[in-house]
Image 1 (tube, helix red, strand yellow):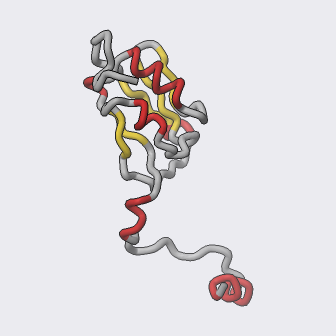
Image 2 (image 1 turned 30 degrees about the vertical axis):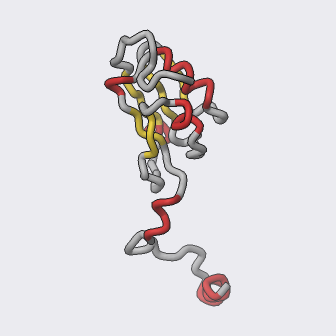
Length: 118
């Protein structure tokens, strides 16, 4: 509340970015990180189906990840069988929307995804 009143008095609408990031931020949801070497087409299709926001799209040998649409819900991690993990990176910003689109090559050719199971 104090910062709000100070802003009204001084006319400042933003504050400085913090010099250090608090330790508790490691518990925040973060974007997924993928192990491309063991990512298969079958698993990429399963990851796409698990994503509620449409941030993952399986497209011609790549998994397209839209970090601008990802909410860090963790459903892809749960469905990924060890191929997907939390990146720990939650400070995502870009000047261009296209910079938030990542293309993960699908390198594995195994019929069954890494980690097996569903």
